[in-house]
Amino acid sequence: MKGLNTLLSFQGRISRSTFWAVVLMNIIFLVILGVVADVMELKSDNEQAAVGLTYLVAAFWINLATQFKRWHDRDRSGWMILFNLVPFVGWLYCLFVLGFLKGTSGANQYGPDPLAAAESSPP
Image 1 (cartoon, rainbow, N blue to C red):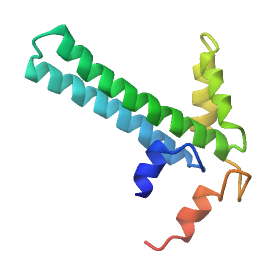
Image 2 (cartoon, one colour):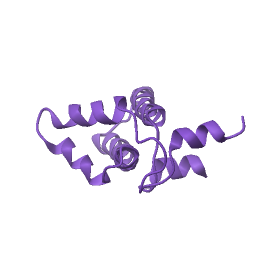
Image 3 (tube, rainbow, N blue to C red):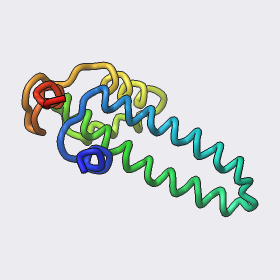
């Protein structure tokens, strides 16, 4: 259940490694979806659009939740995600901050440190 919460919930914090895992998962899933659609030779544009739209809706929600939680890990409001809307540089700024900068050490207003929780968990 924790994995599903990580993907769908807008509450709490996640680490950079979880952020990159979700990004990589989305890329891999998109490639697999393209290969499957090609192999199945979807006959009509409607079938292709339905498959693509289903993926886009799910990926959009997962990406929003993931970015919100990374902003929370940086002790910022999840609404910082709106920087993605700044033309040309907004998404680069978000990718840099969320993907490369360390989160707040220790607990913050959004929850406990995800790295401390991972270190204290038994293997």
